[in-house]
Image 1 (cartoon, rainbow, N blue to C red):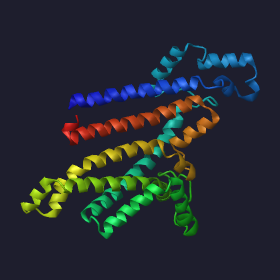
Image 2 (tube, rainbow, N blue to C red; image 1 turned 120 degrees about the horizontal axis):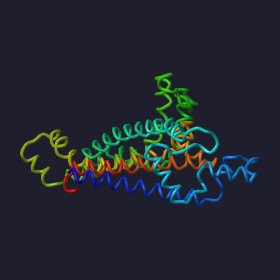
Image 3 (cartoon, rainbow, N blue to C red; image 1 turned 120 degrees about the vertical axis):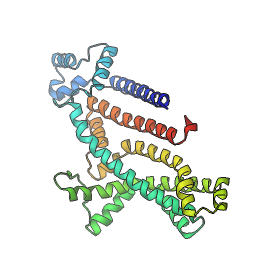
Image 4 (cartoon, rainbow, N blue to C red; image 1 turned 180 degrees about the horizontal axis):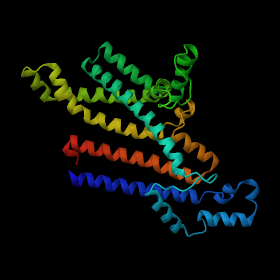
Amino acid sequence: MLKFILKQIFVAIIQILIVATIVFSLLRFMPGDPAVLALGTERGSDPEAVQQMREQLGLNEPFLTQFADWIAGVFQLDFGQSLFNNVQVWDYLASSIPKTLELAIAAIIIGSVVGVTLGILASINRGGMIDKLATSIAAIGLSFPVYITGTAFVLILSIQFNLLPSSGYVDFFDDPIGHLKSLIMPSFAISLPLIASITRMTRSSMLEVLDRDFVRTLRAKGLSEKIILIRHVLRNAVISVVTVIGLEMANLIGGTVLIEYMFNWSGLSTLLVDSINSRDYPIIQGAVIIIASFYILINRTVEIIYGLMDPRTR
């Protein structure tokens, strides 16, 4: 098992290095001079000032030297400075990462609890009203994009009934209740497609296990339906569900752009979009690396969990 875990860690490191190489290379070959952007419109027209800024930013160094210096800094969480001020990129990232993680984790918890519950109820009531209701909810969750459900939440819960704030981020330590209120709508909006995916996967996995011969044998031995479902059926069905949850968690880290913008939730995705608009290359590089690293590490973690739950997959 240790060999399997070390292999997953090694693969994760290689994947992160590949992403870092691609991102660094693409930004270096994009049109426009970062030195001119850093100097602004007026000073950017002065060739001497541009040359000095290029020296300061290390842009006159060979490409491989620039990349080696940057990647060495990345492993020390030093992503350089913003082009437009003297603030370290890591300061921007450190203030944005917790907000995006909180939103993604809240959505995962909601999606997992609701989705697994609906999937179990649907599977044990195959063809019944509960099954039809659960599958209908799943179909609706997959049909509507997040900006539609987010807008509907704002119109109904905020404007119509004035139950929750329409947008904005409230720090937990300043106002815990206000923070939770501001978290409810964006987390539920982003969790609806997740609920749909987990419901469908849980239902199909449960039904597949319920049709196996060992379940009939357990029933013939006189075991109660509750014990069969919890100890045997759910235990075998949960492997596929864990995979879906892990992959969706990875997707949520980088897929919260619309929700963060809609609800003015200043997380990592918002920082990335703002940096692209202003062409602040160091922040773009740092944000993409962090998002890609989360995605890769979560996927590798799911592989490890999968290997622990089912040794055959190793």
